[in-house]
Image 1 (spheres, rainbow, N blue to C red):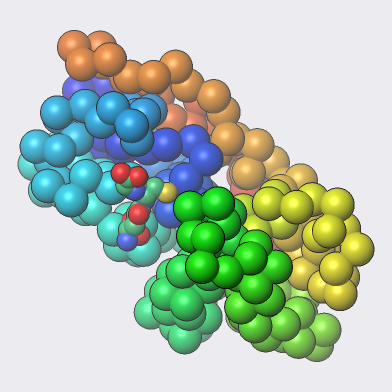
Image 2 (cartoon, rainbow, N blue to C red):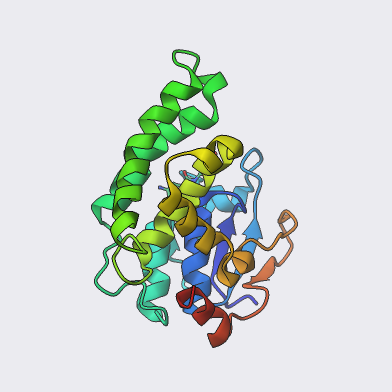
Amino acid sequence: MNDLPVLYSFRRCPYAIRARMAVAAAGIEVTIREVLLKDKPPELIAASAKATVPVLVLPDGNVIDESLEIMGWALTQRDPLGWLSGEELSSDWIQTCDGEFKYWLDRYKYADRHPEHTAEHYRREAEIFLRKIEDRLTGFSWLGGEAPSVTDVALFPFVRQFAGVEPAWWQGAPYPGTRIWLAQWLEGPLFSAVMTKYPRWEPGQPGARFPTEPCSAETVHGVTAQ
Ligand SMILES: N[C@@H](CCC(=O)N[C@@H](CS)C(=O)NCC(=O)O)C(=O)O
């Protein structure tokens, strides 16, 4: 397992989820080290001083510490689902998601830490992006058009987080197309594969293999068939 890339990850982190989705879709095996954000291992900080997850340490010692770059690293090696076809990891969709939307999402999720405004205020600000997604998904099944792409994969973990803040409100919110789109990702076999629970990695331990089960062609293609 020593010659596999090492992926520092946190199960629920949306950035880590998008990276794991790409690694699994590419059929690449890595050693996963599940970390606690409140108590990061020194090995993670030594690999990347900014100490965010995900971080990928390659066997040659190179380090990739941005989720979008990990997606690109994986999918440029193998892209059986065609997620990169015609789509860019630097698209406006992804930039707005990681910028404006994430900013409001964090405030909506942790409104008690930002008492200047109400949770509803933060939710309304985040909904500006949600409405764009909904408009797009009214005409197309996927954000990139006719087929799933890196744009969908990069965004859905953040929309999942937004939906999870007030699940009952989300179910009645005026975003039916986005709800269907999100459910297609969350109910897919690839998502369950990347959400496998791993015990916290302890320094000195080897880490666990990821994906736990190699994703077969059927598993992978299950995603396109949705
Ligand atoms: N731009 C980075 C952001 C990653 C990020 O901020 N991850 C969060 C967890 S979801 C993190 O590690 N935060 C550091 C902390 O909580 O200490 C990427 O795309 O990989």
